[in-house]
Image: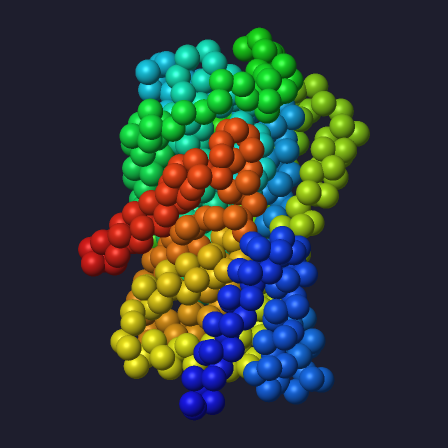
Length: 451
């Protein structure tokens, strides 16, 4: 067996080890990723003195770009939650759509609110609204809840300014504004098909227990019974939420709106930078959803500090995924995968989806899968001169969502809050995630043909 083939065998064993250690033995994913990365480096023949440095370099390169996005997005999400802005948007859209179409309303609510925050944060933020809506309208919890998780999942995997999508934009050297535009074009129909349409089909076929402990605990808490007049206005809440999206779109189309090299062009690119856009939106939220809602400066400071603690785990996990990527590059595994893809003439688009899918199945984390796959596939795409790097971001994001199972925190989150068995969670959540992945890949491929 050639040295290159041995490297691929070692990488396959490493991925299998990740699955077994995380899924079977329930080891901490951060520790597991670190151990497997270092072990792979040693087995692959990397000098022992270079192993830790290569891992640290991968961690640092990843977190250097992502940490600010995580922090600012979390603060904006916290202000949405504490001010009642999330509740206001949900009530307004449900009022527009009516009781018969609440599943469509929840998909749109999740798609909008999920833009600046992680899936887990958005889920916990919206689940009390899901319980309230299901009880008020008398429909199945799955009919309301599955569209919500579909909307959150799509924006988590495909749409900037989510950290993994932003890292993929950076790796593929894509334009963030165009990526955002294409992500919306692909993401909205994907969320519609995998969310409300799928929920309408599967909800009657899955019988949930009549008593849901999480529903009983949450319906008596939070903003569910706050009167409308005590909530912030819909317009100002939506404007605050969508400000970073608008700014990034402006930055992406700066060359169309102003001549390259001019001060206006530079200004549009500056405010369209994801960090600057999120920073401006977060500062605006301190005013519109903080001071204007009667919160004092001390309370706003407390909100912005308290919300950062839960992000530590996901930030470390993303960093560990970057460390694994550093090892894959340093040992030559990434180069061997590149050579293999060229031998089989695998398109960068399909390669991005496939590598991300393998990492998703191995680690359970869409963020780790997308960031690691982008680091592996980007050199191939750049060497091949692939003309649409924005579509590579979408294809890689689609692959990072496939086949959620027991090593994914989202799997257990959905299972416990919806009070389902493991088998029922596979029939609903796992199928939904796989539909999102395949539909998004298909639409991205169609977009590539059209472009």
